[in-house]
Length: 242
Image (spheres, helix red, strand yellow):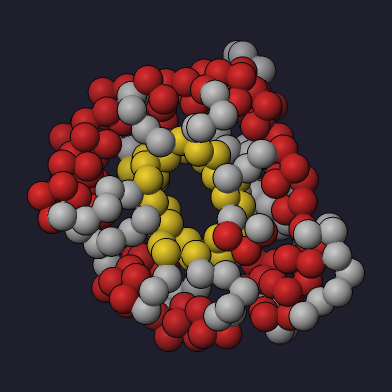
């Protein structure tokens, strides 16, 4: 069911805006992404507020640091109650492994469920040309994504964040149980904004995404609830917007 796989990005400045959107979208989805914009404005308390209200939170802070620092940050996330958080795969296997181990150990010590831990492969705002010219990555983008996904699996992560366009390569490298979270998702009727490798929600789900993240097409709409209902209907192949 689309609603069980849909994560709305709360890319707003204040706790009031975030909680207002959650209230407005109640019943259509129960999962929300807290990224750098909201987290840096509202702090960790916003995660507790959302989880306390019954929402599932994907904490999108993309840790990328030396292994010890990433591990300590991951321990802190486990104590916040987020159901999922991410690390940059480019941090390397040692960073990924130590961070995942630290988060799971803290969750066990607290007697809570361990969060899903996913690695960011290649940002969906990057094109293959930029990856080659600016970052010096010579292999084709799908191969780069698949290689980083395999690195994440070997380091013990639960899955990755990647464009839905790369799902076939990730599945071949990592298998059917590996979690794939797809940002850069845009309904057919929305603007592309700053995303490069975009797909529609229906395409992402058809390709096998476990979760799809949607932000501005919903949160920046004049009527966010109507926009989300329209997106869900489109993804379910229905023309009936409720």
